Image 1: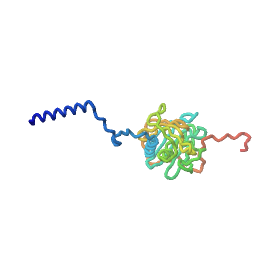
Image 2 (image 1 turned 180 degrees about the horizontal axis):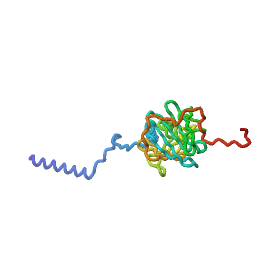
Image 3 (image 1 turned 135 degrees about the horizontal axis):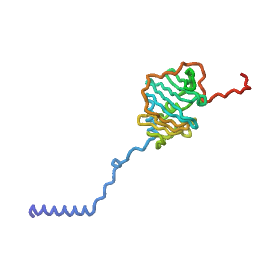
Image 4 (image 1 turned 90 degrees about the vertical axis):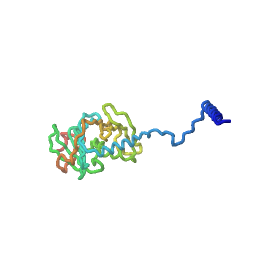
Length: 254
């Protein structure tokens, strides 16, 4: 047999094998664990909220919000985060049954509850030092709205705190990434106010819908001051209560 004939025979055999392979394709090999696509990580709303809260704690700015308490008129909240880490929340119509403006502040020297002058209440601004933990004020003088911007952020960043978090669509009138947060049943007293908190990518609170009312950012934040200035001198006067004191009856002894 010549070399040319042998090559033709080998080529013919290859065609037979190729035809057979086309008619009866081999089964695909089973994928190995390393070749299985796992997809994107599962969403982690608790971690996302913690990241936004951590960014919020690092912000230094002056931001203005509208606050509408349940059944109450809309009033302003001006939050100041100073460069040195101090903060102050000026809250309109928060004391004496909605007739007095106050400020809650924390500086390196401590926490303060301040009475502010307003257009319909001409007084000399003054501050009282308050004790306690976190914002450092008792419930009868605590408007609570300032907690959204300060100590509740620390709770959000603590992954061991017993709260439940889920991602939700923004409520009407709000934008950003929103989270429904509430304390777990085992957490008593509740460390936060249950509701919806909405942040932008930089950790700025753009709004919230809570039991204590609705918060909405107004405009854009402005530059932060180097430090917090109290609106008046520190005195021994008692902080203004949230409710107006009862009016004495004519029969009461003066």
